[in-house]
Length: 90
Length: 134
Image (cartoon, rainbow over the protein chains, first blue to last red):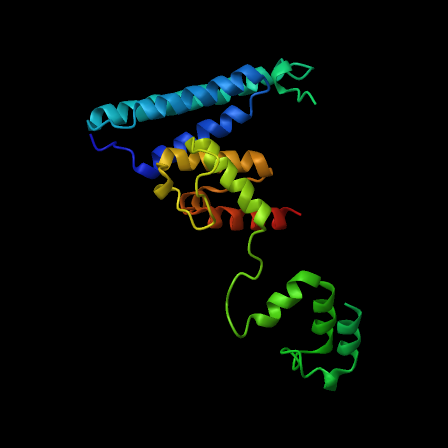
C-alpha cells in the first residue's frame, strides 16, 4: 500500500489540528485538543514501519474531522463568561 | 513631506529624484505614500525588501522561540539563528509559527510557513502580514 503520507502532509495535518483547536469556544477543549495533538505527534515521531505510519496518519485525519464537528457543536453552547484561567489578574 | 510636494510642482527642477521622467501625476501620488516613497526610489539601484523587521518584533519572536524550545533566558537567539540549529524539529517549527500567529494576530498560509527557517525570516513575514492587514 503506497498510502504513505509525505512529510508536508503530516505537518499540514498537525497545523490543521492546532488551528481547529483554536476554534473551540470552551477553554478546556481548546487546551485539550492542542495538548493531545502535540503529545500524539511527538509520540509517533519515530515510526518507521510504513503501515504504522499510514495508520497513524489515517487516525489523525479522522480525529481532525471529529474535532471540526465538535467545534461546531460546542459553539452552540458557548459559555457566556470567560474562563477563570483566561482572566488576566493585574 | 512638504518639500517633496513642492518639488513635484517644479517639474524640470526635480533632477535629484530618480523617477523624473515619469508624469507629474505619479510623482504627486508617490509623495503621499510616505514610507514607500523611499523604497521605490532605491528600486532601480538594488532589488531588496526596504523595511526590515523592527527590533521589538524580532525580540518577541526570539522570546516565543525560547519558550517553545525551553531554552534558558540568556541563550543566544538572534535574528540569524536558524530554528534547526537551536534544536527545533519540524513539529517545533509548526508550533512556533502557531505561537507567532496567536501572538501577533496574523494568519500564515501553508507555503509561507514551510519556508521559514530563521528568526529574521519569521519577523519579516510578520511585518509583511501586519502591513498588509493594516
